[in-house]
Amino acid sequence: MSQENEEYPTFNNAPIKEAIFNIAFQRLPNEAVDEFEKVREKLSNDFSEIMPIEAHQKTINFGSSEEALPPDQSWKHGCQIWSTNKLELYTARLDGFSYHKLKPYKDGRTAIKKTLEGWNSFASIVSEPKIVSMSVRNINVIEIPEISFDLNKYFEIYPKLPDALEKNEISNVYMKTVLNFREQKATGTVTLAGMPNNERGAQILLDIEVTKPFDKDSSIEDVLLSLNSIKDKIFFTSHTPECRKLFK
Image (tube, rainbow, N blue to C red; front, side):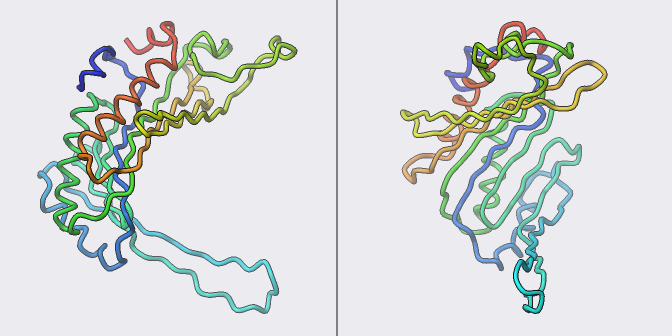
């Protein structure tokens, strides 16, 4: 991991369900999608299954019922390339390329290496598309061994109630916070939301995504490492030591 990340611990039971490393670029012509399956030939044999990604367009008439509507349209937008064990995925789209790692998740540097391997294969097929922005996203589901609890017991980021309502119990939560990291020219979006309870207790979604416009003078690896460091900082400062005990 990068030097900035080394201060953070690793967990045997990390709550991450999916990590996504995305590279967005100017939209390619529709016919470019026909070349995407060639990416599979450049990847390791661990990636063996290809599935199409389709886009759909439907027109709804809110005016006169006599107006003629254009027909519904569907077209191929890209493809998914799955690993044999179904724990890794590349998506190649007309406007972006991404690497997805499902649980278990090791670390950001390993995932970034996989992202670059896939991207280099993709870029060699479509002649290095013009990158617009990049993002790193971690989708965490934190299982709390309680049904009724104060959010501040487990989280440092949560909705603050006015004094007149503090005695009322919060039965569910959905909160989205957008942070500007001006020095790094990045934006972090943090979503905290309640999910259906399970037999072990409550489940809380902690979804963190950090994005940044791409500077052509930067390297893809450096940008992803920077975004991953910001994502780690958000994650490790948004929950309490009591919450951290759940991950060990």
